[in-house]
Image 1 (spheres, rainbow, N blue to C red):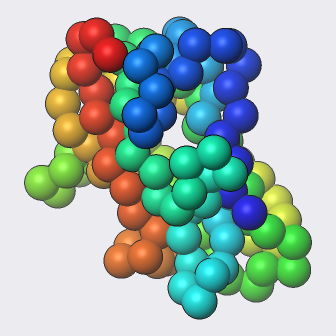
Image 2 (cartoon, one colour):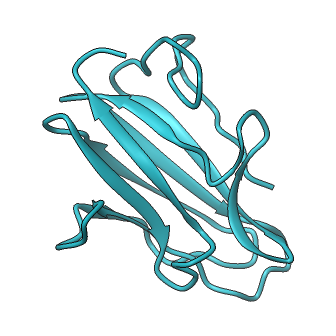
Length: 129
């Protein structure tokens, strides 16, 4: 199961019109539904993440219990290139968190190092959401 938990009440994910506040937590859980995906109870699978530029976020990823597959979330420019942030490798219900500053407005992608075709999504970083 993948969930998004927010420390603050203003949230911008999917169609919501508010931005996540600085130091907000973005929580994603690896789930297998035929194939592995990042899932959010609120937004479904591999959700579009709309984040505000030059803000600090904490990404928290979790693996489902008894999952023997490894997962590692990475963030990089949409067109490819050097990754900007990454989690530790997780499995068997473990979790990992890492800090990420969005920087300038840009389009990024997030994906699992071990399942890059099925566990992937877009991060849209903008001045104002």
